[in-house]
Image (tube, rainbow, N blue to C red; front, side):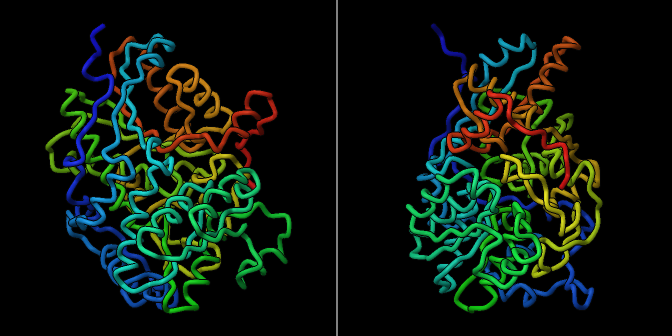
Length: 443
């Protein structure tokens, strides 16, 4: 049997990108974050209470490329970078579609997701700045896991505030994060003033990423040796994730793959940005991807792009962050408690929002019953159990493949499998036994 050359396309460690790509350099009139007190563009010192200086510099830079430190690049190897690009032959066969479906395998990291790409960079820069402790939020737990693990490489302590809904639904995430040596608290918690306030007002709340961000920011702001580390939304996080798309472009060139669609899930935006921004940059400059459509897929429980408003809003619930120009459902919005906790955020990355507002990308949303159906199909055809977040991108890819089938068109679809679902089996169990609740209800 001859294995097709596009069955699985691997790169060597030497092919790990040497620079991150910054979409901010290619979006004109990008609206800056604002100081909520003055209403004026935020200055670097407005971020100093929670971020180290190099992270602040990267957040505001409009340089097209930023060099990746050699130490960070070397450590990306241990996250199994470069990640393979694989063709879903058996899924295609099951769907009886003329479309070709490829997926970027971020699930093969020892962390189980793409989150380590920025965790490494942020831990490195904070250690260089003399920080001894990092605080952060996490939704489903992938980001908290990533930061907890890489903190060991730089002798950092880490405290994680995990959204209560996911904390209770995914108890083994606590075990993993503790195994890596970090502290983890259910959010809202008794460990911060804001957490106690929310618990008093809403004792039964399932929490939200906005609340967890507020708790982590509050803890960081009270100690000059503690900094906050963010897993999504802000520009520097989008920057660090672009290793995904740069690798994918190399692999598509090797496999002679010209995508009609590139699809990724979106919550705060880091996975989507990492996969698509380098390609969008090529498209903007007329080099490649002229006819490629970029599709962001979000949950109906938190449809910031498809139902939100493009305006200035806080990135957290308490109002610790500057005001960000983004698609938002409102910083006080608490989504339904869905299994895709990593997508359960009230807003969207300002850069992803700007790309959507200018028509560079499109968006669609799905209910969690639809996405788990797609995940089950992936498991039974390709043998891979995707994370609930990744199931959104998968569902988007499947629908595009079925549309190609209906039109008898030979389309090429590339999506990002952002993580595995081996810690999300309770959600799959609920889907299979018929007890999974619809997420198409905002609470």
